Length: 471
Ligand SMILES: Nc1ncnc2c1ncn2[C@@H]1O[C@H](COP(=O)(O)OP(=O)(O)OP(=O)(O)O)[C@@H](O)[C@H]1O
Image 1: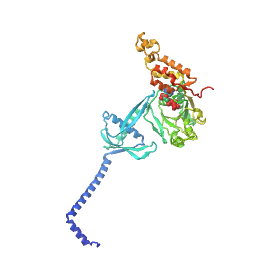
Image 2: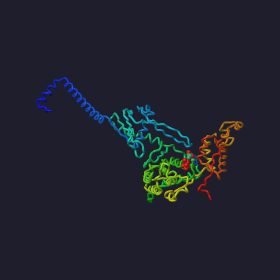
Image 3: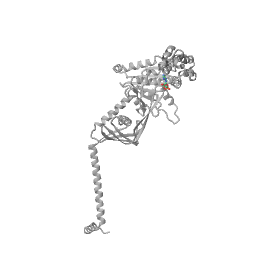
Image 4: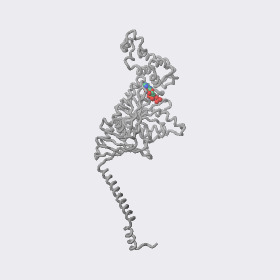
């Protein structure tokens, strides 16, 4: 095909210009280009306005303030009006938390936090957009949860709003932990808070044989007061405790109560936990959150399971020498308190419990008559009426006349008398049979004082020999 010369080209163009189709097309092109420029200008202007008029803050889920911020939002969702803060949100996620009480009962609380999506919140007179995004492809390797970010964009140039908001969120979180014990568990090589902080448990609510609780507490307090002594002598500042005895005798409960009394938190670690390896264990023991007690539960179980793999072919990867190294590796000047528990001290290698690794060991056994008595009184002896034991006390407590007193229910007439009766029942049987404190607790929760004493027989099981029994 011949290529048109310059003249021909001009001719074609001139011809086309006069064509109505061409001018319409040219016009459309012009409009399109104009729109494109306009759109581009809009984007540039919006970007400029964004930079000049708005401030944004990104909070990744790995940062500690992430949890504080979500909690702060959930508080706003509950009490938006009263605090001059208004939250517009229709996409909510639920976070369910349990609170366990001393007597074994538990409460459930639901917190509604803003779910993934866009939310609007007005804080100190400024509107903010809150975008919570969840990345479906990226995982936070330390927690195994999807990677998330929250981006706050304030319709204001005042960047001081963010630190204000975050410190408010931190204060709320700290206040929630006051008077409570935070439980951490291991997630990979990191410690992660488990559930909501638990109410402190009164140490006296864990009824141990006389002297045990006091001995452990005294030893721990004296250790905590001797930081300087340790550092002056270059001795690693750590202390190990071993509580051993049958299941349900109160070992874990006592450690948790003691931590609460000393305002410590607890890091619970099960050595047979899936995926735990020597290096992770060492890292965990060396990097426990400050002011926390490390609790290694059922230390004997980890090494028994290691011999045979479980049905899914999984084997615990912590080796015995790995555990010893991890315990010894905690040789820094930082304070470390390690409690271990086991049901079978006889299965523990002497190397694990030698002084330096375990400095104090205590046997926590099944209920003695005295413990049973004290636990009974804790359950049924709290009101003045229930503790009345002499006829005169009963009369005063129930406001009854002498004759009427005989019709007062028997548990009101003499809780201490019933407690003595219970102690006698336990004493009469403990040479051959035993009852755990956990079973007693369950028994008392279910029934009245009198019924509890009457039906004690069903609770006893064949007694296992305690390591403290003389041959
Ligand atoms: N000595 C005790 N005084 C009061 N309550 C107790 C006592 N022992 C156990 N309980 C109750 O029994 C339950 C189980 O107790 P806990 O878990 O502390 O026992 P444990 O000795 O650690 O058991 P395991 O060896 O199986 O871990 C708890 O609810 C606790 O309140």
